[in-house]
Length: 172
Image (cartoon, rainbow, N blue to C red; front, side, top):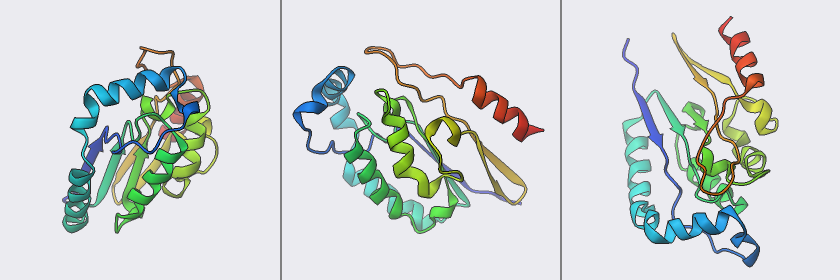
């Protein structure tokens, strides 16, 4: 049995949406400056559109979309993410795992999971959304998320005891 898995990571959906003054507080200001200093040139909306078209043409058995969907975890970024995800002709074949940029500040991940609910097997808050299992024939893809809000200049993740407990139940 052949299984074609496409894996995209750290897309940092370009470009940044129009920002409001309130968006420039704390860690988001630092993230914005990092975007302008280099990441902006690395992430291209045109390339992402071509990649999406190619994936639709290739029709993989499944797509794992992991880590850093957004740049600053703004609601407007997650809203644009919905539009991008709807461009896939096979939404039921997506597994999505947010990254640390999607949990940039307290509360951002819960908001983001709300926007991503159509592509997650369970639709609760982020704390309960993971792990999950997508079964594709004889293959099971397990989605764990280590995305947590951290202080400025810290890019770290953590699975957490509750998620590990739910994973143990899934594996049993």
